Image (cartoon, rainbow, N blue to C red):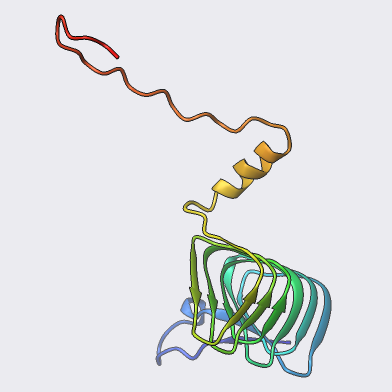
Length: 157
């Protein structure tokens, strides 16, 4: 695993450069991956990946068997497990997913393969409310409708 900074323009302070982590093709990781950098996986990862506020790319050589949470996920390789993104999941033409996808935006290229369900949430915070409702807790009811004005003498239905 290596930690890189993307090349910046001359004179650009290092603090302004975006950091990312690359897991190379010969690397095998078993366990939990968390981080505060964008990540590219070209090797194998088994377990759990949590990059809630970051972007994850599973490269063409990448093989992931994990539950994945990230801001956005780009799949060019293979994933077995569920993908949850707060922004977007994208399956490239070479991408293969065997699991469920939950994200507000989903892009599936021609040639990509998906075996699982897709749930496009309008607001990323909807999922926790639905899970709470499924566990016997009442979900918040919608606000009552505003009263409608009527003319004097008009029938109200």
